[in-house]
Image 1 (tube, helix red, strand yellow):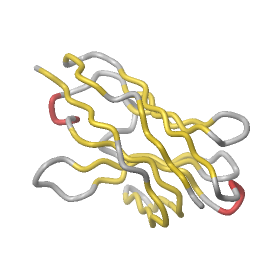
Image 2: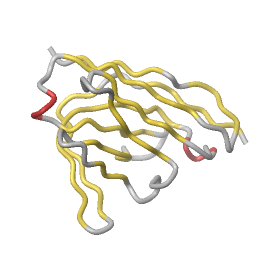
Image 3: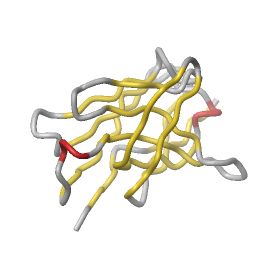
Image 4: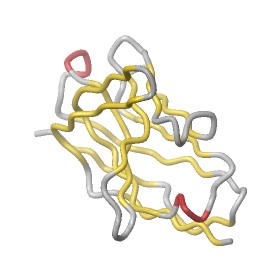
Length: 124
């Protein structure tokens, strides 16, 4: 059974930093990419970043330079480091497994499993 449990969210002031964690288990790491997406109230799901089994990373252009995705060696924990937080970053952040790619400026993700999310609130 695939399990993805996010943590690390909270209330942060604008321009601050945050590191999100995702404990991942129940799947073969070589078969999937690990990724983060977010959902803000009233908005569509937004794919943010992914890391493939070979270590290749892709980012949505809107967060490139501020967000960094990484994993531990065993790919049991997925991290999302966020710098220079903005109020518009307020959302529920989810980690997921699936597939991802980027073609030009277009970021694509295809989710198979995801967790329950962790709330990030950025105050101005």
